[in-house]
Amino acid sequence: MADGHFEVRAVGRVESPLLDRAGAPRQGDEGGPDAWLAFDPAVERALADLAVGQEVLLLTWLDRADREVLAVRPRGERSRPETGVFATRSPDRPNPIGLHRVTILAVDGLRIRVSDLEAVDGTPVLDVKPVLGRRDER
Amino acid sequence: MADGHFEVRAVGRVESPLLDRAGAPRQGDEGGPDAWLAFDPAVERALADLAVGQEVLLLTWLDRADREVLAVRPRGERSRPETGVFATRSPDRPNPIGLHRVTILAVDGLRIRVSDLEAVDGTPVLDVKPVLGRRDER
Image (cartoon, rainbow over all chains, first blue to last red):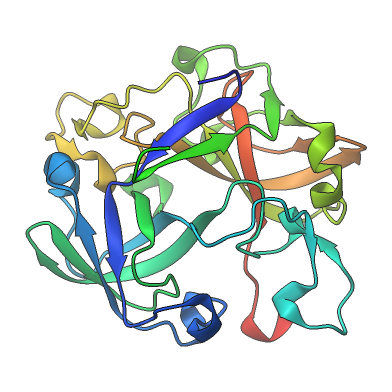
């Protein structure tokens, strides 16, 4: 890797009824469907303590994104001024990492079902992190 | 890139008085210092709408992390059971992407000062995203 370049690796994939960006809501809480996350057997140990009911942050690689875009009209609305992408949630940005807050609905071995996910079918999964609770419960 | 492997690129670097992991707090709200983010001129347009007072999510590449680790004792406490890393905020994980909720304290061209950041000096910055507000204010 050249200086400042790093390699991320898919640890799983999204399995969703959403087949393309045009049909996807802009955020998970705006009508994202439930979806399965199918993980690679190599990360089975990393998954072991995820449980139904937990709220987690899912990080994905938005592989349909345009990485050359630096400014957009928020939510695609032509009436809004062009805005630098770091002040927006546009998937088009230099490092198109998706961040999704979801709830775990089911756990079945290497497959985890989550609520309200706007990522499309086949999206690579990079990471899962717990939502941080109260400081004295960490 | 091989299938399932993707390249992320630093868009900036953290400038912090924290020089190594041993001296860093475990989370930003546990005593993380204020720090500067120094961005690459290539992403100047992407930064343009960040402003003092905004709360943002900063994504970093935790380049000192051990990517082979799949389970840890949370917070390094030997009394706690080994836990799969996807249920922890350990920096050691397959894709060591740091997620930090910070407030913008100052903006000076390509440099942005933020509060409460536990990332160490030199940590590559990958992305900045706004915290999502109310649905009718997006």
